[in-house]
Length: 255
Image (cartoon, rainbow, N blue to C red; front, side, top):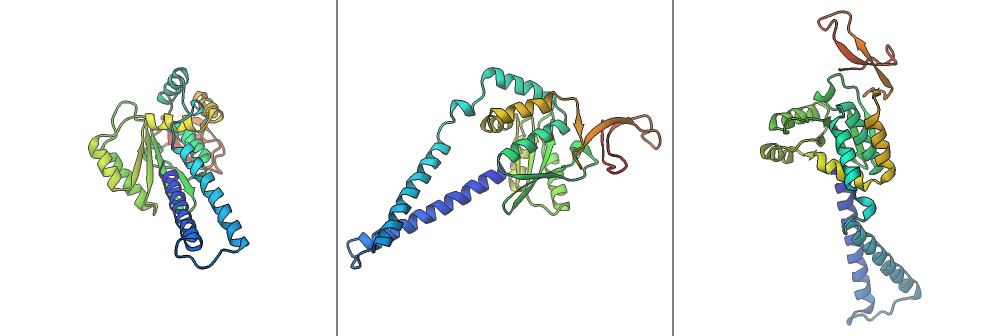
Protein backbone atom coordinates (compact mmCIF):
# COMPACT_ATOMS: atom_id res chain seq x y z
CA UNK A 1 0.00 0.00 0.00
CA UNK A 2 0.96 3.64 -0.25
CA UNK A 3 3.22 4.05 2.80
CA UNK A 4 4.63 0.53 2.57
CA UNK A 5 5.61 1.11 -1.06
CA UNK A 6 7.43 4.33 -0.21
CA UNK A 7 9.26 2.62 2.62
CA UNK A 8 10.37 -0.19 0.29
CA UNK A 9 11.57 2.26 -2.39
CA UNK A 10 13.63 4.15 0.18
CA UNK A 11 15.27 0.93 1.36
CA UNK A 12 16.05 -0.07 -2.23
CA UNK A 13 17.72 3.30 -2.91
CA UNK A 14 19.77 2.99 0.29
CA UNK A 15 20.78 -0.56 -0.56
CA UNK A 16 21.78 0.45 -4.10
CA UNK A 17 23.86 3.35 -2.83
CA UNK A 18 25.66 1.12 -0.31
CA UNK A 19 26.37 -1.47 -3.02
CA UNK A 20 27.79 1.19 -5.38
CA UNK A 21 30.03 2.52 -2.60
CA UNK A 22 31.26 -1.00 -1.84
CA UNK A 23 32.08 -1.67 -5.50
CA UNK A 24 33.98 1.64 -5.67
CA UNK A 25 36.06 0.76 -2.63
CA UNK A 26 36.92 -2.69 -3.99
CA UNK A 27 37.97 -1.20 -7.32
CA UNK A 28 40.04 1.47 -5.57
CA UNK A 29 42.03 -1.03 -3.51
CA UNK A 30 42.11 -4.06 -5.83
CA UNK A 31 41.67 -2.59 -9.32
CA UNK A 32 44.40 -2.60 -12.00
CA UNK A 33 45.36 1.02 -11.27
CA UNK A 34 45.56 0.53 -7.50
CA UNK A 35 48.95 1.38 -5.97
CA UNK A 36 47.97 1.37 -2.29
CA UNK A 37 47.53 -2.02 -0.62
CA UNK A 38 44.60 -2.13 1.79
CA UNK A 39 45.24 -2.41 5.51
CA UNK A 40 43.86 -5.39 7.48
CA UNK A 41 41.17 -3.11 8.91
CA UNK A 42 40.02 -2.06 5.42
CA UNK A 43 39.95 -5.70 4.29
CA UNK A 44 37.81 -6.62 7.29
CA UNK A 45 35.35 -3.77 6.56
CA UNK A 46 35.10 -4.74 2.88
CA UNK A 47 34.54 -8.40 3.76
CA UNK A 48 31.76 -7.43 6.16
CA UNK A 49 30.26 -5.22 3.46
CA UNK A 50 30.24 -8.10 0.96
CA UNK A 51 28.54 -10.43 3.46
CA UNK A 52 25.94 -7.77 4.32
CA UNK A 53 25.24 -7.10 0.64
CA UNK A 54 24.73 -10.82 -0.06
CA UNK A 55 22.41 -11.12 2.94
CA UNK A 56 20.32 -8.11 1.88
CA UNK A 57 20.16 -9.43 -1.67
CA UNK A 58 18.80 -12.76 -0.47
CA UNK A 59 16.17 -11.04 1.67
CA UNK A 60 15.10 -8.85 -1.24
CA UNK A 61 14.88 -11.85 -3.57
CA UNK A 62 12.74 -13.69 -1.04
CA UNK A 63 10.51 -10.65 -0.65
CA UNK A 64 9.91 -10.22 -4.37
CA UNK A 65 9.51 -13.92 -5.18
CA UNK A 66 6.23 -15.80 -5.47
CA UNK A 67 4.33 -15.77 -2.14
CA UNK A 68 4.65 -18.91 -0.08
CA UNK A 69 1.72 -21.08 0.91
CA UNK A 70 1.60 -19.24 4.23
CA UNK A 71 0.97 -15.96 2.38
CA UNK A 72 -1.94 -17.27 0.31
CA UNK A 73 -5.54 -17.97 1.21
CA UNK A 74 -7.25 -21.29 0.67
CA UNK A 75 -10.53 -21.21 -1.24
CA UNK A 76 -12.43 -21.79 2.00
CA UNK A 77 -10.61 -18.98 3.83
CA UNK A 78 -11.09 -16.57 0.94
CA UNK A 79 -14.79 -17.38 0.63
CA UNK A 80 -15.27 -16.86 4.38
CA UNK A 81 -13.46 -13.53 4.36
CA UNK A 82 -15.35 -12.31 1.28
CA UNK A 83 -18.69 -13.17 2.88
CA UNK A 84 -17.81 -11.34 6.10
CA UNK A 85 -16.35 -8.30 4.31
CA UNK A 86 -19.43 -7.89 2.12
CA UNK A 87 -21.62 -7.95 5.19
CA UNK A 88 -19.53 -5.37 7.09
CA UNK A 89 -20.42 -1.74 7.66
CA UNK A 90 -17.87 1.07 7.34
CA UNK A 91 -17.01 0.97 11.07
CA UNK A 92 -16.06 -2.71 10.93
CA UNK A 93 -14.21 -2.23 7.66
CA UNK A 94 -12.26 0.66 9.13
CA UNK A 95 -11.23 -1.35 12.17
CA UNK A 96 -10.04 -4.23 9.96
CA UNK A 97 -8.03 -1.83 7.79
CA UNK A 98 -6.51 -0.27 10.90
CA UNK A 99 -5.33 -3.70 12.11
CA UNK A 100 -3.77 -4.39 8.69
CA UNK A 101 -1.81 -1.12 8.72
CA UNK A 102 -0.57 -1.78 12.25
CA UNK A 103 0.69 -5.17 11.03
CA UNK A 104 2.48 -3.36 8.17
CA UNK A 105 4.38 -1.23 10.70
CA UNK A 106 2.29 1.95 10.56
CA UNK A 107 1.07 4.03 13.46
CA UNK A 108 -2.70 4.55 13.27
CA UNK A 109 -5.14 6.79 15.06
CA UNK A 110 -8.67 8.04 14.63
CA UNK A 111 -10.03 11.55 14.47
CA UNK A 112 -13.58 12.67 15.20
CA UNK A 113 -15.97 11.88 12.36
CA UNK A 114 -19.68 12.69 12.58
CA UNK A 115 -20.40 12.04 8.90
CA UNK A 116 -19.91 8.26 8.87
CA UNK A 117 -18.65 6.75 5.65
CA UNK A 118 -18.89 10.15 3.93
CA UNK A 119 -15.67 11.29 5.57
CA UNK A 120 -12.45 9.77 6.87
CA UNK A 121 -11.56 9.15 10.49
CA UNK A 122 -8.53 6.86 10.19
CA UNK A 123 -5.06 8.37 9.83
CA UNK A 124 -1.93 6.28 9.25
CA UNK A 125 1.71 7.30 9.58
CA UNK A 126 5.03 5.66 8.83
CA UNK A 127 8.23 7.64 9.22
CA UNK A 128 7.66 11.08 7.74
CA UNK A 129 4.74 9.96 5.55
CA UNK A 130 1.13 10.38 6.60
CA UNK A 131 -2.11 9.53 4.83
CA UNK A 132 -5.84 9.56 5.54
CA UNK A 133 -7.91 6.42 5.00
CA UNK A 134 -11.58 6.45 4.01
CA UNK A 135 -13.48 3.16 4.19
CA UNK A 136 -16.63 2.81 2.10
CA UNK A 137 -18.20 -0.63 1.63
CA UNK A 138 -20.05 0.43 -1.57
CA UNK A 139 -21.40 -3.04 -2.18
CA UNK A 140 -23.65 -2.18 -5.12
CA UNK A 141 -21.89 0.58 -7.06
CA UNK A 142 -18.53 1.26 -8.66
CA UNK A 143 -16.27 3.98 -7.31
CA UNK A 144 -16.86 7.07 -9.43
CA UNK A 145 -14.90 10.28 -9.97
CA UNK A 146 -17.12 12.52 -7.75
CA UNK A 147 -16.31 10.38 -4.67
CA UNK A 148 -12.58 10.70 -5.42
CA UNK A 149 -12.85 14.47 -5.81
CA UNK A 150 -14.87 14.74 -2.59
CA UNK A 151 -12.22 12.75 -0.72
CA UNK A 152 -9.49 14.98 -2.16
CA UNK A 153 -11.39 18.04 -0.90
CA UNK A 154 -11.55 16.57 2.60
CA UNK A 155 -7.81 15.87 2.46
CA UNK A 156 -7.07 19.49 1.60
CA UNK A 157 -9.25 20.71 4.45
CA UNK A 158 -7.26 18.50 6.80
CA UNK A 159 -3.94 19.73 5.37
CA UNK A 160 -3.02 16.32 3.96
CA UNK A 161 -1.85 15.46 0.45
CA UNK A 162 -2.21 11.66 0.34
CA UNK A 163 -5.13 9.33 0.94
CA UNK A 164 -6.23 5.72 0.67
CA UNK A 165 -9.78 4.83 -0.33
CA UNK A 166 -10.78 1.31 0.72
CA UNK A 167 -13.86 -0.12 -0.95
CA UNK A 168 -15.18 -3.55 -1.87
CA UNK A 169 -15.91 -2.46 -5.43
CA UNK A 170 -13.80 -1.62 -8.46
CA UNK A 171 -13.28 1.95 -9.60
CA UNK A 172 -14.33 3.21 -13.01
CA UNK A 173 -11.50 4.07 -15.40
CA UNK A 174 -12.09 7.85 -15.02
CA UNK A 175 -12.11 7.43 -11.22
CA UNK A 176 -8.80 5.57 -11.30
CA UNK A 177 -7.26 8.28 -13.47
CA UNK A 178 -8.53 11.06 -11.20
CA UNK A 179 -7.28 9.18 -8.11
CA UNK A 180 -3.79 8.81 -9.58
CA UNK A 181 -3.66 12.50 -10.46
CA UNK A 182 -4.76 13.52 -6.94
CA UNK A 183 -2.42 11.18 -5.04
CA UNK A 184 -5.16 8.83 -3.83
CA UNK A 185 -4.67 5.06 -3.72
CA UNK A 186 -7.70 2.81 -4.24
CA UNK A 187 -7.75 -0.57 -2.50
CA UNK A 188 -10.58 -2.81 -3.69
CA UNK A 189 -11.81 -6.16 -2.38
CA UNK A 190 -9.08 -8.12 -4.16
CA UNK A 191 -6.35 -5.84 -2.84
CA UNK A 192 -7.74 -6.08 0.69
CA UNK A 193 -7.74 -9.89 0.55
CA UNK A 194 -4.14 -9.90 -0.69
CA UNK A 195 -3.06 -7.68 2.19
CA UNK A 196 -4.84 -9.88 4.72
CA UNK A 197 -3.24 -13.00 3.21
CA UNK A 198 0.23 -11.47 3.54
CA UNK A 199 -0.27 -10.43 7.17
CA UNK A 200 -0.49 -13.96 8.54
CA UNK A 201 -3.03 -16.28 10.10
CA UNK A 202 -3.18 -14.49 13.45
CA UNK A 203 -4.28 -11.21 11.86
CA UNK A 204 -6.85 -12.99 9.71
CA UNK A 205 -8.33 -14.47 12.87
CA UNK A 206 -8.50 -11.03 14.49
CA UNK A 207 -10.14 -9.56 11.38
CA UNK A 208 -12.75 -12.32 11.31
CA UNK A 209 -13.53 -11.67 14.98
CA UNK A 210 -14.10 -7.97 14.19
CA UNK A 211 -16.31 -8.77 11.20
CA UNK A 212 -18.37 -11.32 13.15
CA UNK A 213 -18.94 -9.02 16.12
CA UNK A 214 -22.10 -6.94 16.44
CA UNK A 215 -20.24 -4.33 18.48
CA UNK A 216 -19.56 -0.89 17.01
CA UNK A 217 -16.61 1.21 18.12
CA UNK A 218 -16.38 4.97 18.31
CA UNK A 219 -14.28 6.49 15.49
CA UNK A 220 -13.11 9.18 17.90
CA UNK A 221 -12.11 7.36 21.11
CA UNK A 222 -12.49 3.65 20.15
CA UNK A 223 -14.97 2.92 22.97
CA UNK A 224 -18.01 0.81 22.20
CA UNK A 225 -20.98 2.60 20.68
CA UNK A 226 -24.65 2.17 21.60
CA UNK A 227 -27.68 2.32 19.34
CA UNK A 228 -29.73 5.31 20.46
CA UNK A 229 -32.89 7.07 19.31
CA UNK A 230 -33.00 10.84 18.84
CA UNK A 231 -35.67 12.45 21.03
CA UNK A 232 -35.64 15.99 19.66
CA UNK A 233 -34.70 18.10 16.67
CA UNK A 234 -35.25 17.38 12.98
CA UNK A 235 -34.07 13.79 13.40
CA UNK A 236 -36.39 12.94 16.30
CA UNK A 237 -37.32 9.27 16.24
CA UNK A 238 -34.36 8.27 14.06
CA UNK A 239 -31.75 5.85 15.35
CA UNK A 240 -28.02 6.57 15.46
CA UNK A 241 -24.86 5.17 16.98
CA UNK A 242 -23.64 7.18 19.98
CA UNK A 243 -20.50 6.74 22.04
CA UNK A 244 -21.02 4.87 25.32
CA UNK A 245 -18.89 7.46 27.15
CA UNK A 246 -21.31 10.34 26.35
CA UNK A 247 -21.17 13.17 27.42
CA UNK A 248 -17.38 12.78 27.73
CA UNK A 249 -17.30 11.87 24.04
CA UNK A 250 -20.09 13.29 21.89
CA UNK A 251 -19.21 11.43 18.70
CA UNK A 252 -22.15 9.90 16.85
CA UNK A 253 -22.60 8.28 13.45
CA UNK A 254 -25.69 7.47 11.38
CA UNK A 255 -27.31 4.06 11.82
